[in-house]
Image 1 (cartoon, rainbow, N blue to C red):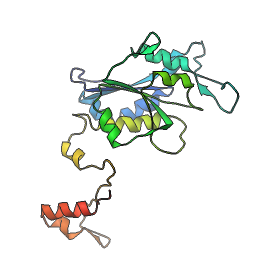
Image 2: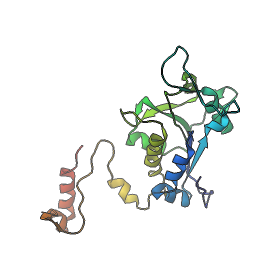
Image 3: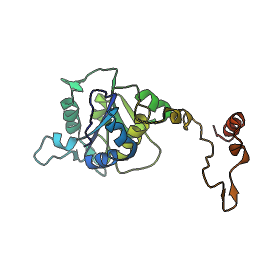
Image 4: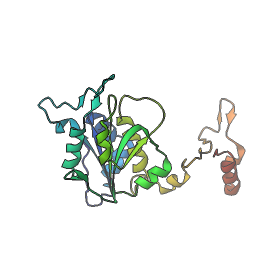
Length: 229
C-alpha cells in the first residue's frame, strides 16, 4: 500500500476491492499514480475482500444455483467490506453525492474520457474487481454504476480498475505536472495529431517542414488537419 506524505491536501481517494491487492499496490507504486500520491492529491488503497468472508477458509466464491460452469463471487464478503468502509448502513447503501461505488463488469457501460472527467469531480471512487464467472446478482444492489473498458475477456477486474483509476487520477489537480498537456491530449472521440522529436531526419523519414517553421498558426492548422475525430 502506498502512504501519503501529506493527507491534508487530499483531493480524491480511490479504493479498490479485490482478492489480489498486490496487483493494485505494485502498479500504484509506479509512474503517475505514485507521483500523485506523493504530492497528496490522491490516495489509492487496495482492500482484500477475502478478509471479509464468513468462514474460516476465507472463501469468496461458490458454485452457481441452477448449475453451470465456474464459480460465482459471493455477496457477503463484498457487502461486509463495503460496510466496514462506512458505505453501507444497515442493509442500505449510504447516499453521498461525492462517492460512487463502481463494479467493473463486461456488461457495463463503456468507459470513456467523458466518464473519467465526471468521476474526477468525486472525493471517493470505489472500484470492485470481479473474478471467476462474475458476481452474485445481489451485489449490484449496493452499486451505483457498472462499467466496462471494452468487449473482450480478461481473467479479472484488476486491470480495468487500474485503467479507470489512472485515467481519472490524471484529471485530478496536482497529479499531472503540466496542466497544458491535459488540454492537448486525446479525448472524447479525437485521436491526437502525429508527434515528432529529434532527429529531424531518421533513415530518410523527415519531420514535416511546417513543424520546423516556428509559425504557430500554421502548426495549429496542421495539427487540426491531421487529428482524427
